Image (cartoon, rainbow, N blue to C red; front, side, top):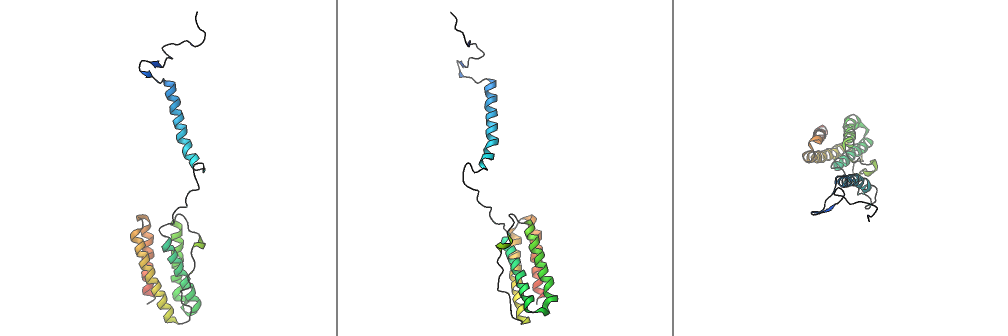
Length: 177
């Protein structure tokens, strides 16, 4: 008597002399499962399923240069408040530094928050014109050196902007002499 049910034929017999032999349908199923796993794994990795929160990105390499630029702006503001007779000389220099800060912020990633820069109080506060100019000249010389070092170490794309900032700071030293 014959058993009812699945009939074993050569087409569905996978236990031949060479052991298990996958058929076309099995290979397609395995390939589809691998593709789904490849797409789903990155999506699941971003949803905090496999670990804690991602570490914050490191600060931009130009953060120090931007902080120095904000410090120069604060120094010029303090100098202008201390001696209003220097307005014609110092305002264009200060405004140049403000433009440099805006240009740096535009290319930085991640963008620094405005509150991340504390304003220094080392700017001259007395009304002695020579002392104010000497202090600003020293600050500009130090800032020019910082910008030149940043220009050498930055990427090619950023070197033009940073080089222009270094050149402007060097000329400010001469203007303040």
